[in-house]
Image (cartoon, rainbow, N blue to C red):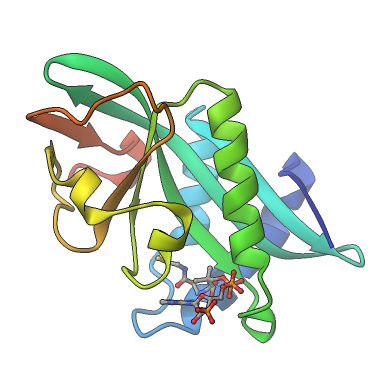
Length: 172
Ligand SMILES: CC(C)(COP(=O)(O)OP(=O)(O)OC[C@H]1O[C@@H](n2cnc3c(N)ncnc32)[C@H](O)[C@@H]1OP(=O)(O)O)[C@@H](O)C(=O)NCCC(=O)NCCS
């Protein structure tokens, strides 16, 4: 298996991955495939990686630009969403590999903080925590809203704000 940046020719395969991956969840597919395309079209994709096995795209993850403010100062932020793996390959470490690679690339881009809205049993293994996200106002605030400081020089603010890219809609 290889992990590499998404290329324009991959969009259809990436659509299929997210449709199948999210159809396998309790919530179903909620437009994740279109979200990926819109984020790219808007120029808000910071890191977009596919996992390819024997010429087939089997997974994808995307980190997109966020507007983040900490005690009135801007922070370079990236939202992790979506991540999807073909259902027959769940649990094989592909999602983890994509996320670790993505975080490494974000760090290289000078991104200071990453947020995710997801399962509290999965994302803490990468360092995401609800506690780190707590000072940041967001419509997604709650136990599933987690953050990870990539810049160890950044201190958690007293208060802040985190907004996803416009592709996420008015409540972002
Ligand atoms: C969630 C997902 C991306 C994880 O990718 P993966 O390649 O299957 O996961 P990995 O093999 O890297 O990691 C497996 C671990 O993740 C856990 N895990 C997988 N999906 C999980 C979920 N939805 N909630 C909590 N834990 C989950 C497994 O229990 C396993 O835990 P363990 O290492 O303690 O045994 C993948 O299962 C998927 O595409 N799911 C459907 C789409 C989805 O839910 N995306 C995330 C939205 S927040």
